[in-house]
Length: 54
Image (cartoon, rainbow, N blue to C red; front, side, top):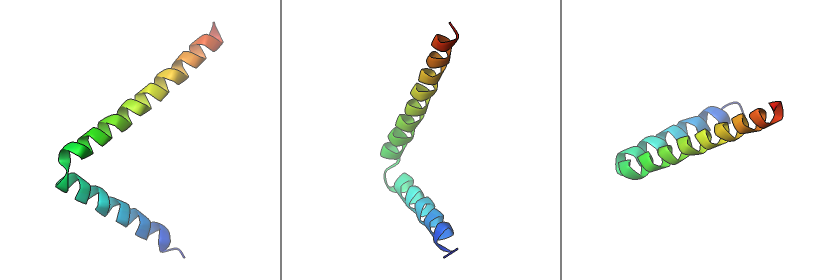
């Protein structure tokens, strides 16, 4: 059962590479959306702590 996690990681990496090669614009949009989502979440956490401190 120890081989399941490394196999899953390899499959995800292979799929990501295939997606980047076959649809680079879509892959870039996906990454940009993920980065924007993380930035929005960090901004929300920052606002929460600012409101909490005031």
